[in-house]
Structures are given as C-alpha cells and as structure tokens.
Length: 300
Image 1 (spheres, rainbow, N blue to C red):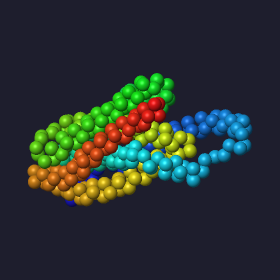
Image 2 (spheres, rainbow, N blue to C red):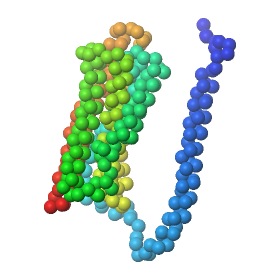
Image 3 (cartoon, rainbow, N blue to C red):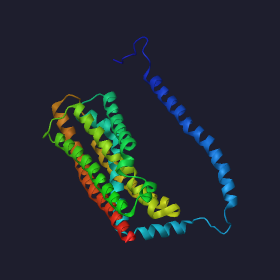
Image 4 (cartoon, rainbow, N blue to C red):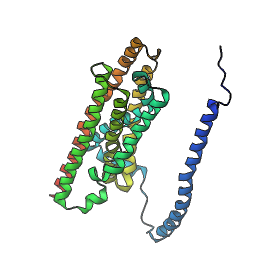
C-alpha cells in the first residue's frame, strides 16, 4: 500500500525548499559585494581613462586570435591543452561521486553525498595551503633572480608531477577495488576521494591559467584560456555520456551479484580516468618543464 508520512514529520519537498532558499540568500552576498566594490572601481576607472592617451586602441578579436595562433605553434601550448582538458574531466567526476559511492560501496544517499563534500574539501585544503608554495604567482616569479627563477620552474614541474602521481595512485587503487583485487571500506574509499580532490585542485587551476597570462598578456590571455575550456568541455561531454550508461545499472543494494555487476560497470570509467591521469601527468610535467627551458633561453 501507499505509505503516509507520520504525524509531525516534515515533507521532503519542504526540506528541499529550504535548500533553495538558502542558496538564493548566499548568492546575494557576491552580488552585494560586486555592487559595492564595482561602484568604487567604476569611479577610479573613469578617472584613469581620462588620463589615457586617445591614440591607445583597445585590443580586438583579431589581435587575440593572432596571439592564440602564435602560441599554438609552441609545444607548451598543446601540452597545457591536453593536461587541462583531461584534468577538467577528472575534477568534474565530483558530480558522479555520490552515485559511485552508493553503487559500489553500498553507502546511503546522504553518506555518499558527504563523500562529494570531502572531495571538495580536499580541493580547498590544497589550494589554500600549497598553491603559493608549489606554483608561485607571476609576480613572485618575476621578482626572483634569473638563476633562482629557473630552479623555481623546475620545482613547479616536479610539484605538478607529484600531485598528479597521487591522483594516479588513487585511481589505480579504485580500479583494483572494482576488480576485487583490493578490499576497501567506505572510510578508505572516502579518504581516497579526499586525496583525489587534494591532488587535482592546483594542477587544474594554476598552470594553464599562469601560462595564458604569461603568453597571452592582457590582449590574449582570455582567448587562450577559452581555447583550453572549449576542448575541456568537449571531452567532458564524451565522458559524461560514458558515465550515463554506467548509471543505468540497477539492482537491489546488498545483492552480491548485482554489486559485482555494478563494480564491473564502473571499471571502464576508472580505467579511462587512470589512463587520462597518466597522460595529464606526463603532459603537464613536460609543459611546465619546457616553460623553464624557454625562460633559460631568454635569460641567456
């Protein structure tokens, strides 16, 4: 028969209504900040524009495309394009973590959603604590001496190699778990997801953005970054289609046969991500290393 909510129980739709209300209120915060600081910035920009020479022209789309074409003739550009596109897919796996943890670790919907939060927490911890140490900003890079700047580029390359090596190990352990070669508890699976997010955040956000700013400047940085994003979203569309077919696998939770079939269904996804992680690790290391080589050539 149809079950009816017990007396005093809060309907599910009412609970979700508060989630959307809270998200709406939170979105007002950046809007208010943009309105407040944007007004001040607008006044100062007006004064600066009056001081600028009229002969100074704005960059055009043609100029941006010319910069993009020039950079596309370098190996570093393509290596950053490959690594950025793949890492975008790996980071976007956050969307499927609840489904994966529910189907393969037999966790509840609420617990599996918390695992997704642990992935995001790993990204936050990584960026907030290690970003400047492992991948210093352009300003910090330009203030160093030439010799130390070259060694700094080497350190960046090895740091990116280490981060993506951690991501590769996390994926390899998950793939072994899906093949029943390794037994992982939900707690260990959650820890692996935290480390996975921790290892991806800096390689995803910093190297390609810094490359675009350095090589593109104020005229072409956005165009180079957009080129990376276009390829990344294209690859992500293909990946999402693969995962969507996996999500069709259903069965009663607790059935050993269905659990095995679900794990086997997820194996191609993690095999694809494992291969992508290795490819991104090699390409990003090569891109950052070549940037250091080019810097060494420029410094003589």
